[in-house]
Length: 69
Image (cartoon, rainbow, N blue to C red; front, side, top):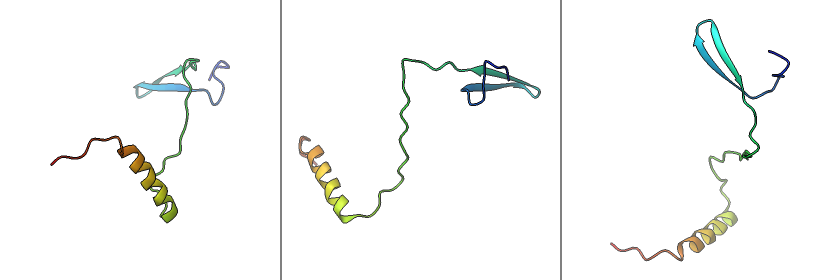
């Protein structure tokens, strides 16, 4: 790679055919910031935390209109 594209640079790679790749350097935008959050698949079983979750749910649902069947 050329010196303008040091190791660890952000690039996109497009395969044009079996022997040709097009590599484009991505210039970081100053208009956006990326924030990374860990993926949480499942919360641990914790009775104290479940009380907190229930309080969150009650607070969020208190302004909802009553359910009509």
